[in-house]
Length: 145
View 1 (cartoon, rainbow, N blue to C red):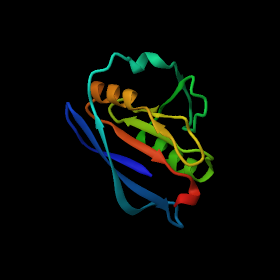
View 2 (cartoon, rainbow, N blue to C red):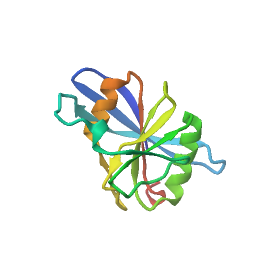
View 3 (spheres, rainbow, N blue to C red):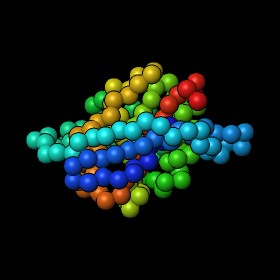
């Protein structure tokens, strides 16, 4: 499942999700659009950039260790290919943010499990405050598709 950023303002972030599944040629095929996520953007005493150390990796993966945040310096196409591959082999779900102007992927998920993952909303809010362009991606496991 891939989330696309629709719009955001100083107060709210609205996301919609598009679910993709590979066809026989491994090209993304939109199945349906559903699910809206609304996050209130406000001030927080917490500095999410300081919460967790960032560990840079070469290939996107699910992080089950909640003591650090994963990041990858990669173009969008490379990251999307890795997420498609990951959706077929991962045993847990994950959230990722992609910053197009910086070509960086940042992990947004925590408490990853077989059927769910929590979204670090405070870190997402910080990304929105610091960046005018971002995309959010969420993988579901193969059996959901």
